[in-house]
Length: 462
Image (cartoon, rainbow, N blue to C red):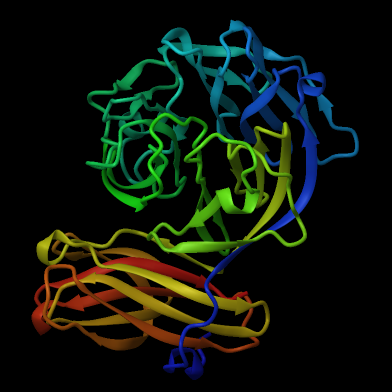
């Protein structure tokens, strides 16, 4: 099936900003009387059926905290298990900080921070809570399962990743807990000048890209190898070095990708859920969140997230109100994939999309190409599928069966990477499920040698 002619015609200005829709399914009480984890919920891991929650001591005296599982959380008879990973006499304002679930291995990773390094700062357990291995340290700065680099060596890039205050690298443990990389030799997670108080990290399971919270900012590390990535500042938020429980979550659905984070620059009560919880696209553009009729009581800005791609559902833990909420996530129907290649000044052209499509009715969107060389010409190719075909000069052709070229975008004088432009497109009604792949190509200084390619953007017409 070929794209209809109106799909590639220039249209009116772009439509509404892309939106993430959240449909509320369930509220779960995780207070200590229910879960046995402690007096506050600080971290959550969601499998799509079972909910894991970890506790924190929010009181003024030492007390115990733990982890527990609510089996069949969405079913007619959800049941809490027996608390595990019990930590006794935890100092006030300390406890578990991070959880992550690995659906492939059915394992749970946890970061525990009593204020100083301990023998079990990082633990990995099976689905029932039995300890598989532990590592000494302070589990305060993010724990996540690293999927590795696509096409790389899993023995050098995949495993259990964690971070540490003041350290530049992500440590990586293998399936038995042995070091693959330590905090000094692991791929760098910091962005110069943006703080080194790392609080959380998460990965794109398809690309291996890493997303990091540090000093309340949001970073993205575009994966370039088993132990390498190119870090950039995604969100420059109000700096807050000493505020904990700053979290991040990568969300990929069939309709698109976003990064969720909580803008927690202070720990005071009275913070509004909808103001604190934010969404940003992997290219750095903000994304509105539509909560529908859902409204949560004010809290302290401490929220943790866990997304299950198999069901498209999201768990959000509300520390202050001792609740976990489950949502169905809907994202605008386009997402970035693949890697571009460097052009003038070592800038990678970045292609993104923005706009609003109504299921069955189409709509307007705009392909936006950024970081183009000055005095150059750029086009966006639309095709019927994706591929990964080496094109020379370190570049890859990511679109298969190119049907149409949109453009041109002509850039004026300026510094390297200063050029950008948008190409509006109308998506007509009546083509649900239609797949379109797009990629930008830049003829720097008008020359075809060499061509410089962007990442790809896939569109699934709803």
